[in-house]
Image (cartoon, rainbow, N blue to C red; front, top):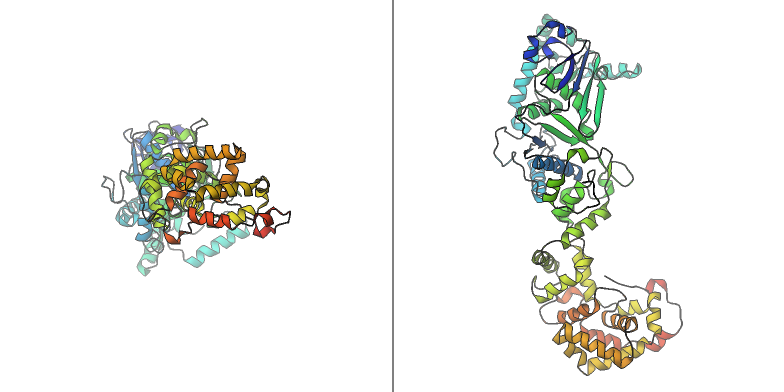
Length: 570
């Protein structure tokens, strides 16, 4: 027999009378079976009664760093709340007393703040539903545990550890689920009193119906169903008085008026126990949305063996919060267009839980780097210059973090920077002069054979006469004018002119725009710009090296050992 229950998130109920809400218990008793043997419930998709307001929560355990998977869950909660005009609650689940630390909690809070995911209620922010650490809510858990004991939904279990192990072994031999089969579910009052008088430790076990099923309509995964006969009576309070995770979570979500529980799919099995507790305590059940796991390229669960996995690690590696947020949002969600670039504000505007994919998302570190580069170059010019300039100074390359050299260098090199830390490599590359390695490489052979020695001789003469230093001193316009005149004198233009100049002046075959690069190299030679230990080769030193090149030996058709070849480019 099944009956439709209106005005609640439960569509069909078949259970004990005491499992029903109070207003339904007063209805005809024929609506309910007076037996513990069957139970079925379907959660409907209509909103729970929370005054119409959306309240979501992110509830990390402070037992380590914030994993990128946890960060994405926090992000989806944040986006859902902001898109609905609701509240984003941060709750710290620190009931694991042995592993939880305030240091880890502080690191998690720092990472969330760095990502820009500001919470409306939680640690450091006042709210009407605190405290927001589970370790500070024990009195509340005990209160509701006693309520369940009084209503008969839980009972004291005095089984020893040895007895419980034996039950599991017997179940395994019989190829049955490892459910509780002890006597205390049906023990008499006298048997219970006898154990209490002896001071025997006990747990609180929840009475689970022996038959039936539970079904929910998950906002991401659709209909999910469990058979109750695979569960067995489960513990809600340990013998040391500490509540069990599933009990804490249910009490917290209910008493904090959480309307939507958006979490990782690994928590999906917990929903069965939590739903039973919701019903027993007459709490309205929230809507659930279980997000897929983030997978490694080999489709296994992303872990430390695949490299960096925590938000803090990526922050230290030079990633921007904007790039991290954008990339995490695209792991399982999209707005239905080809667009992949979003600011946090745009994500709030576009986000919908209906567009979250239930399939596992592959974490691609290459794509993350690319995404970060997009956001880096999208920064306002002043902010990008300040960020990179400070990096160059702190890395011991430049003496100052600002000035015309920094401005010009950032503008020239920004396209080769995806992480702030990449800026070290591109600037050092610009300042270096690996001419010998480049000339010895097979790739340079066409340039060498195109009478490179003649261009070198003319270039040295122009430098010695003061033409090149004078043009470079005047800046970009004067340099371009000189190059044009130099090309005419050699009857060269295009690639036949610019490739020899690039090789001879930068020592490389490839790189950023050549004219700006040469002017910057000249400017870097001014006193007080480049740190002496940075490996900078000044223009004067470059021409000294050019004068020492043995072009006759280089032009001989001799094989060059592979290990001596090198082509460096930005």
